[in-house]
Image 1 (tube, rainbow, N blue to C red):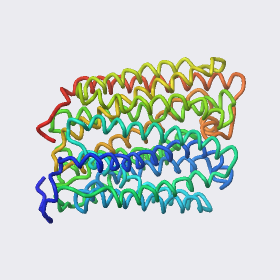
Image 2 (image 1 turned 180 degrees about the vertical axis):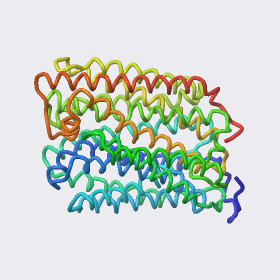
Image 3 (image 1 turned 90 degrees about the horizontal axis):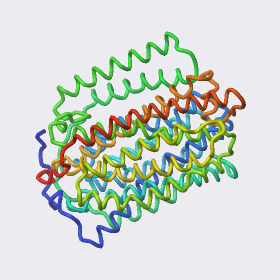
Image 4 (image 1 turned 30 degrees about the vertical axis):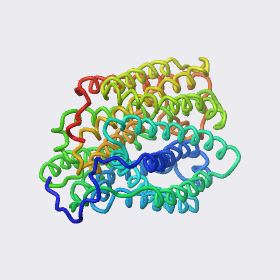
Length: 488
């Protein structure tokens, strides 16, 4: 891709910042990861309260989560391109502003359409933050130190997940659901103030073109498939759902052909020619499919099959997130020493073990299986994320760090969206789908034979996730050395 220079180089794109500014800059990036993690976990626990208070359908409340993820997925690469054009720090700050405004509006939402619409706006802010954070880290740290930096990023995610789980349980039990969004406001304001004082843009500004055709076909294609899958999770297959599914698949196929003809595509397929890039991105996608639904499935098990209330279920999962937060920085240092392949593959292998532990949960098994499984999978994620992110950003050319960061986020987000819907479909096969869906959002609990049957459905879902994780581990192991230093 040929880019036109539109400003004088401020500094080399790979040149690190001075150590004092580097530490503060990393802290600001961690806030972005933290606020995204808090939002990702806390909303799940608040779905029952939202459904009851706004009196909306179960299918509609699902799009409070899925719609947000869909926006992040579709916009990540395009908004990473914004960072290359107008400055990554500037777009990062814009992300906090949009996310904070979206949070305020979500808290003020009065019905399902308003809440879903404001969640889409919040997703735009999250996409701006996610698409530019990896590139900012690459500007703050030299290649040999980026693994440690991504390790701290993993710490921020784990710590944010802890806060989300804890706050979600407290808010749902003792306060109103609106506070899951008000909580974001002071964090967003703090991040804006610190980013303004600490972060500076580096590198050349690039003139980029936007791939509207690719963005539209990807967005509508994913929407069609997801609408069909969420509909099937809560009801029978009918002609309408088949139409959405077929239409979505056709649009996704068309998206690939559109991208091959674009000079500056939504998903820059030329990145796949770079050694280690293709397996790293595909491993990220499969890891997302295999892991994102774990929280949903475990909450389904604890609240639906075992009858726990939200706060007790939250407290049971906290130790795993705490351990994951501690492990992250150390696994990042391991990446700096050994390269990306070993830590990332170990992390995926650990996640496979976690799925095996989750699969042993029954209607009468010890609740500690859920806690231990969550601890193990959080350790696995803490090994995988820093190593895989480092592999992608090391391989990316300096003038395409924003695009590479956005593509990585897009693949991860696609995985997360399909993790949710795939897990629901598999887990609900053993009981009526509408009842399984009600259990997921916390509006129904099971007893007797139905509890046993649903536990079997969850077991099938965890074994499915295990198989996906194994595929991700194979890709990770075959990616090469993970030390493409000539690129960054």
